[in-house]
Image (cartoon, rainbow, N blue to C red; front, side, top):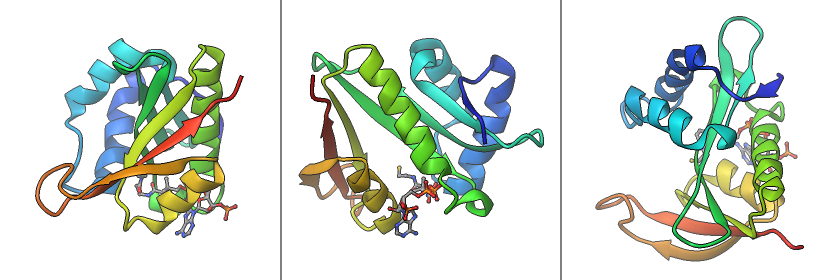
Length: 149
Ligand SMILES: CC(C)(COP(=O)(O)OP(=O)(O)OC[C@H]1O[C@@H](n2cnc3c(N)ncnc32)[C@H](O)[C@@H]1OP(=O)(O)O)[C@@H](O)C(=O)NCCC(=O)NCCS
């Protein structure tokens, strides 16, 4: 499960992961092209070694100085529970630290116990919750990781 930055040619495989994981509630394919152009250094994939990707993570810059965001993380169901999500997250956080970030922020469905547990073990703390963040009945927990020193 090598973690690496995607090539332009990987973007269809990233979108295939997105569709396999999130079904119809997905980012459009062109979002990944924009993410590739805007935040390539914060975009990582886990290479399955079989022509497919096991997962991906996208980070982004923000309006708040020093604060970078994790925008999306997905691991194929068949690849879960093997450390792929943790490896992608840890690699992205390391890249963010290397570029001088002071904190990492994200939002997650508070009912998504697996993802919330992952983020907590990485040191994220809940700093807020919004009931209709993505629309009615779409609550999100806002979590933040302070990167000391
Ligand atoms: C959340 C997700 C990325 C985790 O990926 P993964 O590769 O299975 O995670 P890992 O194997 O690296 O597990 C890391 C930690 O996450 C937590 N975790 C993961 N799945 C869990 C589950 N089903 N229940 C409880 N904790 C879980 C554990 O703390 C685990 O640590 P451990 O292995 O020491 O127990 C994956 O389940 C996924 O893609 N889910 C659907 C999309 C999603 O929820 N994305 C994130 C929110 S936007």
